[in-house]
Amino acid sequence: MINIPKGTKDVLPSDSYKWQYVEDVARDVAKRFHLKEIRTPVFEHTELFLRGVGDTTDIVTKEMYTFKDKGDRSITLKPEGTAGAARSFIENGMKNGVLPVKMYYITPAFRYERPQAGRLREFHQFGVEIFGAKGAETDAEAIVTADTLLKSLSLNVKLYINSIGCPTCRAAYNKALKEFFAPHLEELCYDCKTRFEKNPLRLLDCKEENCKKINVAAPSILDYLCDDCFAHFEQLKTYLSLAGVEYEIDPRIVRGLDYYTRTVFEFVSTSIGAQGTVCAGGRYDGLIEELGGDSVPAVGFAAGLERLLIVMEQTGVTIPETSAPTVYLAGMDDACRKKAFELACALRKAGVSSEVDHLERSIKAQFKYADKIGAKYVVVIGGNELESGVANVKSMATGESESVAFTQAVAYFQGKQGTL
Ligand code: ATP
Ligand code: MG
Image (cartoon, protein in one colour):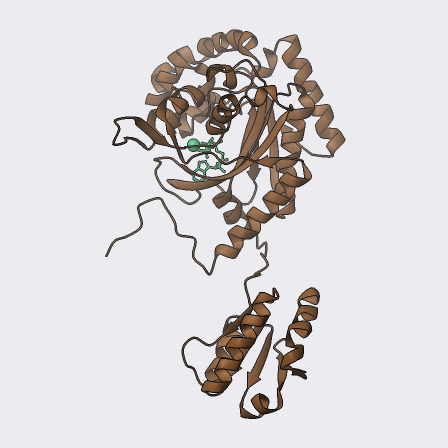
């Protein structure tokens, strides 16, 4: 027996409607915000993530699925969606087209992590990238897009925002952070000792309890913002208020990825504990240049679909099951079953979802099956029906029946579909 790899999950046919629902809502929200879909490969050259995610991040130092292909190239399964989208933006010269480029993706992502609830090795993200606009209204638009998605899914989440400034103000802040953490260096975890040297800002992102305790008293980045970054943050707040989106400022949010500048944000579920961050993002004006393109501002976010679904489940959000067939056609004997098959073909051709028996069941068992799969109507075809060309259509919801001629069946059920 071969088992599924650790940290991965099947989406079973009985559950896939939940995923489709979330994806449909995400695509609808994307459309409302004039975002177009981008699809990039599941694997890229490893170099892309080393540069585009950053070599001091957890992702790059510990979590990537990297391997040599048969041509001896170093390949990595995408651990997130932004780097691929940015590579494509540069490679396809999108900078010279219509700006800004507003896009979204729905993609699997791969990280070698310790699997837990809401933390998998293969997971899925809905993400948004807006390239070519530097104003705070675009940061706000990205946040409002995420907020609209979460509200459309009836999720109760809290938005936290922060600004981590630009390289100029961050130099002063990093210095202050180092001064603050220096006396605690021995108490910090192994990773934080490296962060202290390489990227002090990321000390604030540590998930170890002891490091978190020390972090509480750390200086706030907001006291170190330069005038431009301060003004940008103020503008962001104004635009969020115009959108009617509530937020809380949390100066300790820094995000795991290296390429962020200015705005960072997280949407955190109030109903689940440890893996409560369902959506995270921010501005990354340095990314395109880091990847070899001309300087182009960028802002975006990614939401984890598994985490969205967990929160929806835990808070009792019901997801409509849309995969039940409209009609089940039961056939008594061989000739009747052939008629049922023929009618089902005609109905399906006309866009009416229909099902027939595939297991030579008795009529009684077929009724049971129709009920189990949630068919809205059942048509029973026996010898009399075959002869008269008229059958009884039973509504499973009301128990009421109506006579319908075979020749009228398509029109009859097309009419019903609209009212379901
Ligand atoms: P965390 O702090 O929880 O590790 P992260 O900062 O690594 O998250 P991002 O890289 O910002 O996460 O990814 C965006 C979103 O993708 C997260 O908010 C989360 O919803 C989801 N996500 C990230 N890693 C995983 C994972 N291993 N399994 C499931 N979902 C994930
Ligand atoms: Mg992580």
